[in-house]
Length: 324
Image (cartoon, rainbow, N blue to C red; front, side):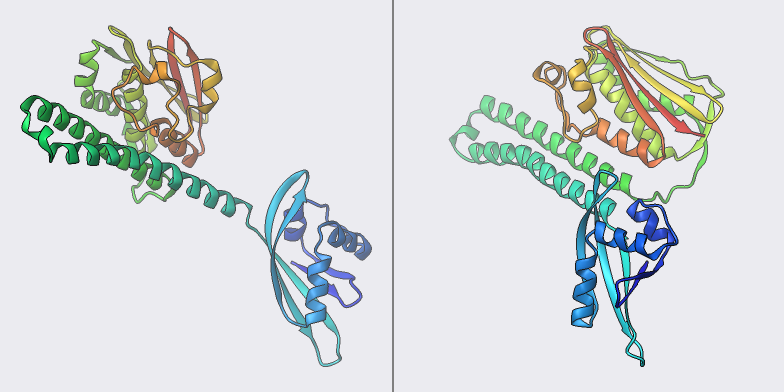
């Protein structure tokens, strides 16, 4: 909050306003008046005095070399003795607007991704309704494509819902989690896919390793990491899951012997809908490009960090650190 009198002298400049504007709070009114000039608030204050009514504006201000968005609201006050003053209240909108832009970009990308399988399904169904549907061989081939695209659509919807849930506060309560058991359970769900490539599994998590956390979030993280480790693995490869406890955090590692990720792509693998180059795409039957983005969102939600260590034709290790 900032309070300015009719002579444009600042008589109130609280610590919160100083923190928002990234300036050192001083006692001299002149210094604070210069701050008002520096951050182009004087024009809004003048408008308020001239109109003698409250004003509101969104301002782009340069704070320590960074552009931030603020909503500035002014409150005009005049007492019986004709003494006029303006109070300025600042709201930092930077984070809110960033989230809105991210959500807008996400919806645009999601709409595009949803359109692709829907277009394929519609096209093949229309073809089947014609003469092509009378040929048993063609009919079986097209129905398989429709089934595959329907499965892809279902996976995409589930992943979009997972991304959406990662923003929300979970209704689940933190409980004691037996990590070894949860890892084994997630592998069991994917044994059929792994068997098709003869991928072996090594659970290096100690039997008595327990942490306190949210079960559904850990299951989702493991499901996506183990799933990727199988998808991008080679024939007769392996997947190894390990966990370690440190003083203030615990560490989860998922390692595969797969095709690896080129160094120039590693900084992008946590982006939504990113699938890498064609050589990686050829190793999977389907994928939404959201798996690692979901993992990244969940790790960030729990104030952790995630890193990748990968070498082409050697394999990939994803390392997650979460506070205890």
